[in-house]
Image 1 (cartoon, rainbow, N blue to C red):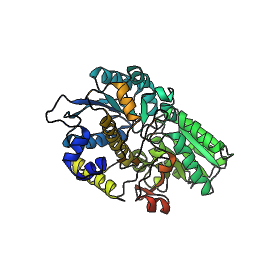
Image 2: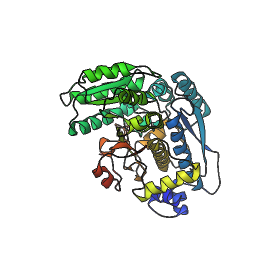
Image 3: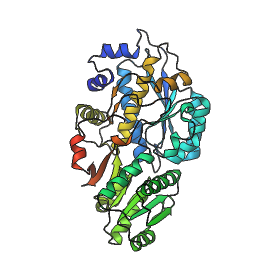
Image 4: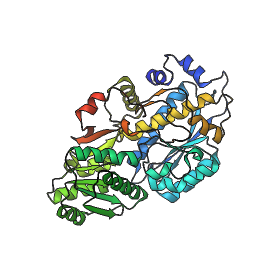
Length: 400
């Protein structure tokens, strides 16, 4: 916990942190923070990790005094990965009087709820969902939608750049028919077009599909030398297992869902060697990350199934706390908090990144492409795909 406090202020000591947070001698009412995500259902493997990242940060912040003597109180809504349930939960968060919301793992679920937060002028910070349209729906200066995950518009070209360097240029794209798959497909096709390439085969499928061997055979017949998958659940494993059944030994690459248990445990040996974009790999490469990993294990006593989800949500919660530094009267109306998020003056030395002005009036995405690394499934866990990334991991990158 002392390490977490040190990251916040750059100065050791609880008293200093409390002064920075504006803690008063007497305690007031709680400060309600909404959290919404898939805590049950098919996306719960990373939804739960998102929630745990928030809970860990809130525990540390409250131990240091909270905000102006007020403890953070989490109001949690389970969207079950369902857009209609997510909309109802979002409306309930607004009605509950939360000052901000942290949430959404599924792009399609988030899309249906954005208007709720925008209309209420209530900041929403998205720590997991990566669909590019989420922070582009409203004119950026007017938008209350912030994000601390890597949008697909930077993940897709990052992965495309990597596979081209490896000599894989005949790409087959497998994308589900959700909002996530739709947006991801467009981003991959755009990234390929920027390199004067076009997918040799495109397969679309609904969530829950159990057999994609027909499309895999078609991709094989088209001469594909790499499969780029864009789906959030067990369908990634269906693709990997289908390749194994066909004895088609081509690499599988994609965005961060290839680091999820649904894929790694579902595909087992067929998942080995798969590569994906990552912002955080759970290795104790420096003090911040080592302390975070230790604190997580101490609190939850279980393996960190989706490290990126936990780490990004943890950093998101601290960034929200940092934005409150500039609001000194204890009143946190939505427009004032939006402006505070756009003008965070203190550097937050986080787990995923070093955040120096992560947001601005004209930029609501905290992660830039230079912060990404390539992960690889090796012996059932995600590690670095490139030795140079592992060497550089001791230095936490800043937004460019």
